[in-house]
Length: 194
Image 1 (cartoon, helix red, strand yellow):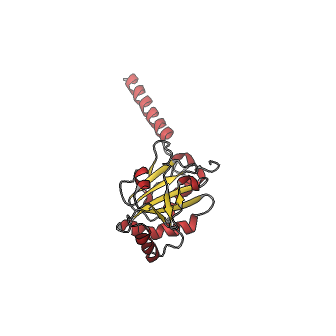
Image 2 (cartoon, helix red, strand yellow):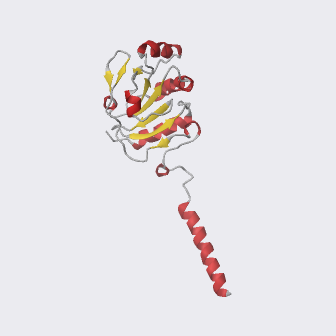
Image 3 (spheres, one colour):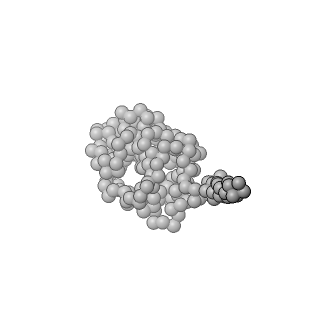
């Protein structure tokens, strides 16, 4: 009977010790991963290092652009279309995010995939008052297919060297504190990369 009691005590001690050893850090230390909550709760970090595709889109002037043009910055690529109501709802928050966070470390590339290109995209951008976002176009959906977009809207985050960090399928309010915290996490994590 004493042996059984001693064994029970050992099991309890091991169980309590295991709780303390595997308990997550409530302080949210850097090694606990990106803060994925609220508006960005559907963000899925990339499970493997994957270089972004070397495909080009155009800007509103018809000039070609690729991810390489943004090397050195964390790049949030958002795909939108005039026929996508959730896209149109989230675009103003993306425009505000660009106004708040764009700089040497971060930028947003919002790519329109309407087949009619500039003729359709530009009036929508003007109607939505998108003052901070540049107009980018992918009318043949070459870039969206290469980036594996299956749902509209989709936002893909790339590091300073063009590797995918993760993605969010569906819409979000991108200028919220939790979205900014997620982006700032990756900006800080990739500091010094290029």
